[in-house]
Length: 370
Image (cartoon, rainbow, N blue to C red; front, top):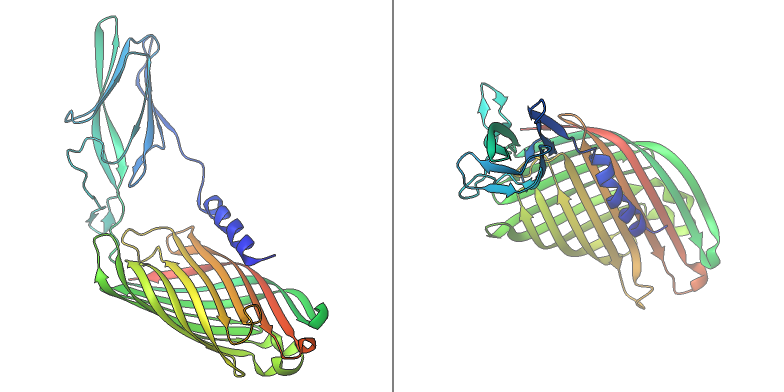
């Protein structure tokens, strides 16, 4: 199965991994024969989100909800009032608020007072309530160091001409990984490395802002790396001398703090020939974004090509998607999907050789930031 299908399934699965049931909370403002109930889903207001507020008072002629300062007001001539509130509720002008720190503790919640009125036969009762707003943490971190261990489920195939199979294997193994990330001023950088039983690799991604904008910035991004795949030794002929691959590329990028998207052109060499490469990369590091998020995502699509007919020019193609979802303060669940296809077309088609590898990665990682 192609990696594009795997990646599509992975993107659909990420919300299931990161998400959970939306909490609902009820507050009884009044009880007895004339009850007033307020229900919120979710129970707090989040930055960039909304919450549904439902106020019920059986037998009421009208229900009114307004901010303490009277800037925002909702009213309905019924016994049920349903409204959607955002974090800007009750503010004359929207403003960004971040969680302050007091005596080493992050004060993550801000209370907004509201007034609720329930009228019945010309008689109105007024209640005061507070709605909690979850303030995001203003992320001042600039360095993140991550180490992890994952189990890799791999399916590998090496074929010759006429679909002749030289190797077909399905296995699982352990892989250690170490990542270092840095985001400060105009620079974003990432150093990554991994070591498994039969493959290893390391690479560097570096980007610099050239033109800064209000919401996003524009610049240049560079990628350089080396990978070694010992399992290709099982193939015939020249595969045993093409295990180590070097890549380097550079191109324009779009950046905000902790997020980089780029398209790059460069070169690829495996010891036998040098090819051109084109790649698209996306990196979202939740630990270093302006507001710290519980998810880190990296995606890459790269292909290398040389001389010859348009079909034969495609020698190497890599599609990869990985995500780390934070489940505790600094511990994250790491999942990944990738597909790597390599082809060595020869002048004599009977000598053609191709290799493919599909990977599913599942593991954990621990991150330290400062």
